[in-house]
Length: 54
Image (cartoon, rainbow, N blue to C red; front, side, top):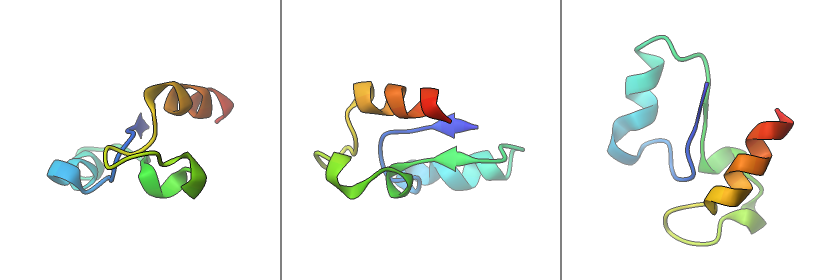
């Protein structure tokens, strides 16, 4: 599992990871819309707290 703060298709990260045995990629689409604060996605501190809840 990998957590990223932005769109999973940025630099084809999600496609690459899924084809290299990552079962899950948590990206911008998985976070609540009100937490996406800018083009780079969610702030790092929110991503960190979110990851601890899963």
